[in-house]
Length: 397
Image (cartoon, rainbow, N blue to C red):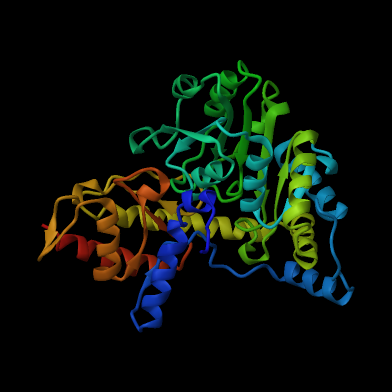
């Protein structure tokens, strides 16, 4: 008899990947589906980064890399953190892995014991809760809805802390909401956490360069908690390098050593060629980042304007990332023919089958009643998708 471990049976499949797969299957069957479910820039990797990868191939960077990554890449990341975030992390405090996703999971596996509590502000990215499960920790969700711009308050954070709390996961700009914590809002959270020296802070900063505010801040900036902050970031979003699979963690030396030990036993070092490409991304010209950021801001303005034309949707104005997260519970209880919408998940499936637009149910992000749309697609796709959604929604009575 084949046995599947309990840890795997306890995990939920990724809802975003599942919806993307359904969209692909419909497309393969000849259906004109607009996929707004996947969180992936639709731009190509900048040419100077691709050239660096080609050069690495020609120079025979084809052997195993050091488990924590090439020293030259870790030096480039260290310089980036000092230049852009004004924090000092030595190369020895940095570990490069197969995407920011792996480094998030590595940190949790390296730091969380069974029964430890991990605070997660929700709505939150689909994988956070599942990663905590994998580490045998206990998730403590702190909810902030659209009425508070999806951002938790210091009072909410303090109320969630118990003697078992060992970590908080913060994501700003946020997936799925696009919300960005201001300097003062982060300071408020940091001041609470400063009173609890046993709580580590895992800052997922992967969307930091896709922002529509004057300046994006990270909780790593605050002296009173800096020695407990673990930053996770990577090249996927800012440089349109999702498939290259390069992310990193930067944090206390003890955590970096623990992550290196773990990574050394199950993946070892990340791709040699992708690492040299990432090094070029951090060391090279940054105009490409700003150009993509401007395109995302234009698309944000476009989709927010179109969303206001859909009756019953309640949405904020995202300040970063490339997602819209409307509250759509007004459609629960409505019908089209024999079909009744009983949940936001039903509404999302109705839009896929009736409007041929793929979105993701908010329940996957610990926020039933909402749904996520990615606007990392063309202006024309955004206009057409929102037209289809508006017309399909109007049929529900």
